[in-house]
Each structure stands twice: as C-alpha cells, then as structure tokens.
Image (cartoon, rainbow over all chains, first blue to last red; front, side, top):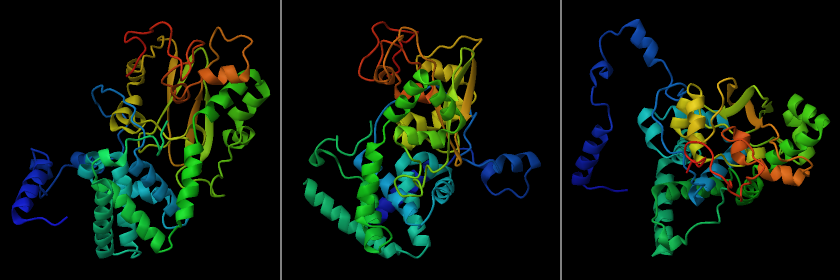
Length: 143
Length: 231
C-alpha cells in the first residue's frame, strides 16, 4: 500500500509503541552477564511453562482465507517447494513482535511469501503487482 | 467444525490484507507451476473430509474389541488403516505437516492424558480434523504443561488429586490422541452409539465422555463449578 509522508510518520510512531517500554537491557549493551546470555538464547516459540492468566478458550473455525492459507502452504510442501519444518522455522524467525502480533494463519502466509521470494521463485515486484490486482478484483466483487 | 463454505456472504465481509496476500501467493504459485489449482482443490477435499469422528470410531471400537485396542495402542499409525485412514493420504507421502508417528494414549482410573503442542500447534489432523483455535493459542501452549489441572478445570473437567495427569507435548515427529475410559451407563451399546459420545474434546483430553452427552446433545444436568460449560 502506498503511503503519504504523514501516514509514514504515524506508522513509525505506532511501530515504536510495539517495542518494550524498558529498552535498557536490550539496547546492544557493551557487555552482558552469562545469565542474560542464557536467557536471550531461549527461543521465543518455546512457550511451555511460561506464566499466563486464564482466558476464555473460544471456538472460531477457519475463515476462507485461513483454510486457503493452510491448503496453499500444504500444496507448496506437497510439490517440494518447502517442508513443514521450514515453515515452522520461518514462523519462529519472524521475531517476537510479528510471531505474537499476527493472527495464526497470517504467520503461515507471511512465511510462504517470504520463502518464495527468498528462493527467487517470485520477486517482490511480482508479489506487489499481484496483490494490487487481487485487491482491486476482490474490492470490485464486494462493492 | 471448520469449513470453507459456512460463512457470511462476501459482500458483508471487509477485505483484509491477509486474504489479498493468500490469493496473490496462491495465484503466483499456480502461474509459476509450483503446484496446480487441481492440487489445491484435491487437498481441500481431503482436509474437508477429516473430522474427529474417525478418532471417535477408534475409541468406540477399542471399547468393544480388545484385540483392536491392543493393536491401536501398539501401532496407531498402522491400525488407523482399519478405520479408513492411511497416514500416507492424500499425497502418497502423507500431508506435509502431519506425516509422523501416531500414538494413542489410554486413560485408566489413575491416569488422565491430555495433549498440547508447546512449540507450535501440532495436531493429528488425519484422525481429528483441524484443531480448535484455542489449542493453537499461546495461552494454552504456555499453561497446559505446567498447570494442567487448572486449565482442565477451566474446561469444566475437575480431576481427583489421586488421578495422575500426563501431558503429552506433540512435535514434528509425533502426534497423539487420547483414549478415554468407557463411561458408566453405556452397557450393551453399539459401536455407533459409543462413537457418538466420544467428542473432539474427549480425544484431546480436556473433557470426558458421558452417556448423556454427544456433540449435538448437551448435558441434562450442569456439572462442575462453571456448569461444565466452557463457552
């Protein structure tokens, strides 16, 4: 999506607000303790045992784009473009902000797009043009 | 159950960038010959046909047929074929995400099993269908391995202290399903009758089967602090 300078400033401010309020230990310090080094090496997707408060466990079911994301990712695996281990690894490597910030299947489709670009199977220009085309088509169908 | 066909008319749903991205990736992949539209359709047919009723069937048959139960507990992957599930489906090499060993976990009067995937969202789709959304949440993944009794209680399942709770963490090589104990009041029932009370949540381990509860029949009497209703 194209954006104006004002929108860009607004976007930067909102993105900054997603980062931790206390940045001191995470601002590339000259030295860190061995203990902190150990903590920092813990992978972000290893959630088992982390404290959390009870939340309602809700049912939703897949929306169309979510089921289609699952199918697209599985077809890419079926036909040898990638495998599920790579998909999971790429999700984990999105970084904490996106890993926890994106909806479940948005993690999947984001990594699929990145995998195709990284392999040179599509270019970012192609993807951008295709997204513009698809967006215009779907908006036309729904207006 | 998940489905791609049960939603509001297109006009009412606002367009999201995720829909746009998915369709763009899919169309580019098809244009480049990475997979075909027919591949996508075939995989959709397979995925839509997966439901937990296969797991229910396995448990019901195990309650009636000790030899089947023994085979199922010994080799879940192979014995799945007896209820029509070959883990090599639908591609001949399994699904990219689920071609793994399948283990069935037997509950006993002193042992209750429950499944989770702390590292991602591994789930035995070939026999249970798509996982419920809560199963994939960071919250369930964080807490189930450390506070299982509390989490189970939130689902309305209160286990006595003398029942051991064993949490099984699924991974890229292993998928699990729980085989609950046959409840009282089901003496003389047929396999179909028994299968109907083994709901998805019983196979995950966050509920126990009851003679008066099926997926389409709610309990006659509330049970537990929250009336046995988690929603």
